[in-house]
Amino acid sequence: MVFEVVLTLRAQTDIDDYVCFIINDSRNEAAKWRDSLEEQILSLSEIPGRFSLIPEATELRVPYRAFMHHSHRVIFRIDEEAMKVYVVRVYHGARKPLTRM
Image 1 (cartoon, one colour):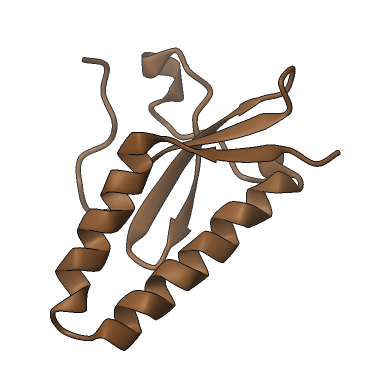
Image 2 (cartoon, helix red, strand yellow):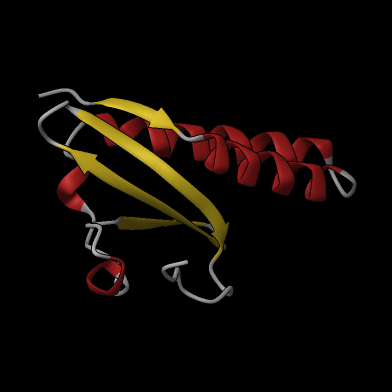
């Protein structure tokens, strides 16, 4: 089974913000970070359930999963019925966990 991977606007903004932050130090490193992140995100099309549910999933009442990309936590959810994976956030792992708003 191959899932379609969908990047939400929020996740894209998270990625763009970090790239803008590190590009000041090194364009090359910014490009490498983005390219390797894109590769990992696209790999979610195959067996996205290989990653664990996040600890906050119960409180949020959404079965979010995550993987780490360097210092960043990539949060996503799987829609088995639609065969889609939605990447919803990409943020620094040192930040506080997700919460309900």
